Length: 370
Ligand code: 2NL
Image 1 (cartoon, protein in one colour):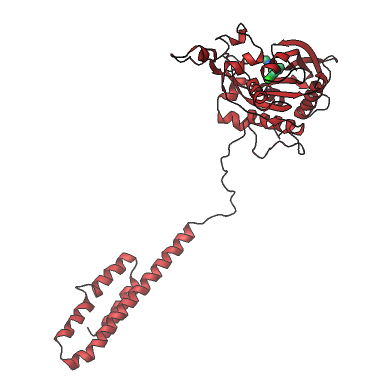
Image 2 (cartoon, rainbow, N blue to C red):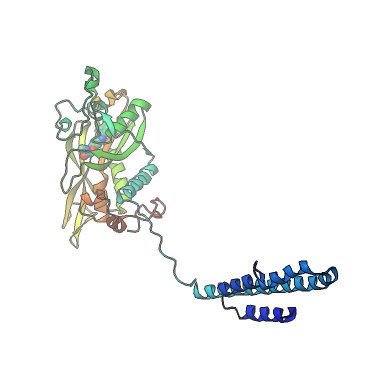
């Protein structure tokens, strides 16, 4: 077969090759070590000078032509394959994007943020402190004597005393704080007066049923200054509760009560009505169809507490209050089982949780889009 015929044959077969494997077989057949064109190249060695000069460029040209044809066909095949893949793998850009799973803000966190926002507007700072406390900051400084029932083992989680504890350490038993009052004690001891703080956080009591969990959340407030009286307490709580429940008709009833750390002590009730089987806050509890519900405890800080915190009770006085955050959340957003708050069930959180976009602000309203 002369070179021309060989080239025509190779071109025809390359054009007819159906896939890359067939093309590779042709490359081996023509240009491989044992290939037809390679064999022709080998014949050059046995030729005379003149013959080689004539045949050399022809055979080299043939080799180059076959190599080019192979490369061209291979590039065309690969482009075809890519086209086919692109046609098969269509991407519909009009489809909605898959939803990003996104967590929610726990109702307790939302309540804490709302409370901090409201009280910030009234000039209160947020104070925090340790959850593991000693019994001086949790009980003694709050005028709760050794004999007080809350100090007993069945109400408070104590840490075991170290085996080698001496008498002084023994008096400083460690425990899980039963209220956030020790945070206020620490603030008075460390920073003195005046004071205007709220102390939100986790507290612990050895108690567990449908309405009590061993851990729950509390916010306490403390104001200490030179001429604070019960009127300031009532106005502050009224202003806070009206902002929190977003109702101007919140009516409070102050009842005398007893706490060791306040004197006088005041239990605060709020008026409510029953609407469609649910308690709705607002109006006087003495109005027809209304009632009073106990909401929080408060009072004027006991002189003994002020003195134990290193302040002169003849110069400084003030009020304090404490309220359960979990209960506030249940009231505001109509949840009924306290235990579900701490189960960590994402379905419950999906239903009752809040969007991180629902930042409570006084201008936009502290109530989230429930
Ligand atoms: C309640 C309500 C209350 C306080 C907490 C307090 C804190 C200091 C001094 C005085 Cl440092 N009082 N906190 C006052 C009254 C009530 O909590 O129902 N507690 C059992």
